[in-house]
Every structure is written in structure tokens, then in C-alpha cells.
Image (cartoon, rainbow, N blue to C red):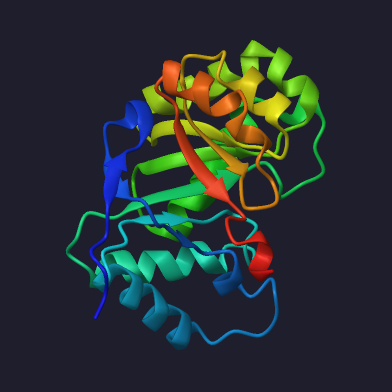
Length: 210
């Protein structure tokens, strides 16, 4: 018997999502051999337990994780929110973070997920100088205007990146490492995110199983 799931609003998206999400990196096969039917069964069990938020990326199994989530979406009637990521498929420098490239990468995720509009895409650990280039975030705004994306955010490794990212009003969420060993985000970032109504997606919450 499962404990009752709790839900909260994901920042400016207005979506109420489960406090516990399903991290779909492992089901892409990046951490070793996996069985797609077993992975899909695990995702169904998560939804049965009340999970409504799924986090993936285009590089998780080179699209395999996204394609598994597409299967899940077809087999469930619940409204599930899917957050994917882009940027890490190719070697990057700032010159490659153009609207055209972002659109191309997002279109591949749309195809993998088999959706017209992606719920949330996160810039996947962009280079530091990207945070000082408004054109990168303007390109994300164009994707929203195109109707192929509902919201965008960032996935970061450092608090400094998170604080810089939320200076852009279109950033609705930040995914950041926070666990029993990594507590620094709670010192300043959480307060600033709350002030700006930015949703926080905790990554590595169990310290990679440690």
C-alpha cells in the first residue's frame, strides 16, 4: 500500500505535479543493460503510486528514454508532465546555441516523445557564457511562440549558474543537485527562486544511491 502522494505547483507553469518525480536517465540504458518492458512496468507503477512528473533528456540512451515515455503517455489517461533537456547531443560552444539548432534538437525530442508540444525543456548544463547571452533565452522564447514548447528552464550543476539563470523572466524552473551531502542551494538560491516563483527540480536527491 502506497503512502498518499503530495503535489505542489511547479513555479510559474501553474502545473500541480507530484513532489516525487520519475527520473528516466537509467531507463535509457546509460547505466547498463535494461529491459524496456521492465522499465515501462516501473513507470506504470510510479503513475499508479501518484507520480505525475517525468524527467528525461535527449541524450538518455540517445532518445531511448524519451521513446519509452512516449509509450507510457499512450497507455495512461492521467495528465503527466514531461520535462526533457537539450544541448548535450553535440560538442557545444556558444556559437552553436542558435534558434535553428535549438529547434532542430527540440524537434527530435518531439518526435521521440510523439507530441506536438513539449511540456518543459531544460537547457542541459549550458556553458557558463551562455548565461550572459540573452539571445540563447530569446531563442527559447521563440520556441514557445512557435507552439512547440510550453515552458523552458535550465538544468545546472552550480548554484552560481542557477542564480544567473533565474534573472531571465522566462525561466520557469531550475534543476539542481540537492541532497543530504549537497545543501548549499538552501542557503540563498531557494529563497531567490521562491521570490521569482521559479520551480525547483531536485536532481541526484539520493546522492546516486549512496
